[in-house]
Image (cartoon, rainbow, N blue to C red):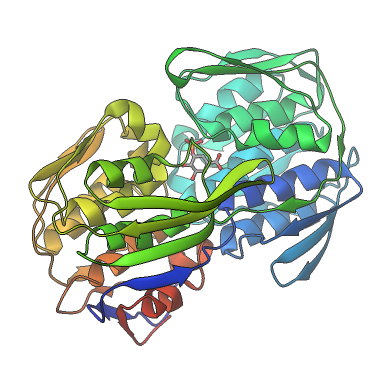
Length: 439
Ligand code: S3P
């Protein structure tokens, strides 16, 4: 995959307002829950990236009818009558699509194969194979529990499952299978994980019982098989997409950037807490609730001096997707900052510990890799040729870092940005960075 690649460097000081694309996690759920629902659902402000379009195409292959009007998607569900897809379902770059779809297709007695791109086919699927097999599905993977994944399901039974890693994708996969299982299904998460599924499923007519435990642990229980009814969703702005511009504002004295209608779900706002702890001014206005999620306009103003900060391990799940954005702030802070408790970084769209550390080193920023995170010493980054590792968040992090470099930040490939934020480079330029060519 090649596409023209832009060169990013310092332009005017960063400043302005922008509307991040719709939240990716919520868009995936709206599409896949809509597929299972009886009736027509409208999804407003859907994330326009390839990942969510991939979920939409998979939903169509399984019997949903879809009509797109810009970023409003109208989806009529297949409800209890999923179609047999004509071939393997392509989940592209998206682990969320694959893991959630696995829970859905586990109800069908005919085999369904899920596959994806070179990044996705390296990612671990044993985490969903184990619980789905316990529920009665038969799953075949490639070597090492990697995709492609062929699932032959049918008669499922509910289970109580202690999820070893606090993963919302795994919990959602098991709950989605539980919707077609005999008996109750309960997932127990050992620590904090995003809770969009618990917030959304009741709006589709599926009651869930949630019991909070210590330190962010929780149990989510579904009483038994359930059918869904259609639901309209107004998707809040994606905090993980906005993160790059907010961190870049924190990294530049006097810069001031506002993300409008951003999702402020507490399981997703760890980066804002970190930027505030580093000395950036973080202000929320217009706070309200949309689609069962807290949203608001978030303004970050860069302080004269940004302090180094060690992100406590227990915060890591609340900023796991924002660690690439965090490096923008950490590389501008005075001294050594660190993130720990983030071993999951190694199994995202790339091994992000490696991808971040190597690219930061190329930019002249001192970095140390740790098994569960990284240490970054603030300094003056220089432009470099970034290796994207087929990972949208690596591209977006270093492009935003480029807003601080005198010489150009260039990339081997920026096509992955289309998976979550197709207009990313345009917004980066609007906010003040110099962006030449490509994208
Ligand atoms: C997601 C959950 C997280 C996150 C991913 C999206 C979701 O992954 O990193 O980008 O939508 O549920 P895990 O569930 O593996 O922690």
